[in-house]
Image (cartoon, rainbow, N blue to C red; front, side):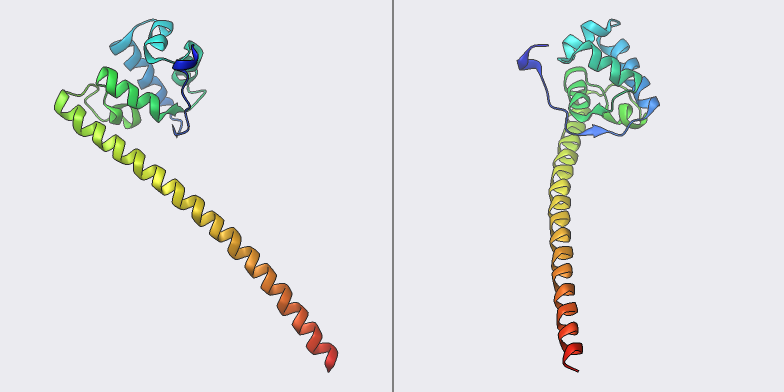
Length: 145
């Protein structure tokens, strides 16, 4: 695989053995019987495709998007067996918009979750500092009695 064909797969779909089988079925029906040829067409290594098809690695959303764009594969079929397997042009356009919107929403939710996690961490630090101050003040008051 050349450097220009290398992709980062940040977002993945939770592993499901049936999904791995559907990916393999889609590859055989829509792309090629040969895993190597299909992998080249999908711009991934043959070993990556093998891992995805055997369920060893989670299937990246980028690969599902590429299957949809290049082969009109219905992402809902890969994800949860919703038919049809292949989309017509009108449904493809609508589905691509939905997938893009979902991807954007997921990105936004991830950013919010990161911000919440940072805020929560900061809140716990503040609580810890204030708790120490309360303990110190309590000790001072008790020592004056």
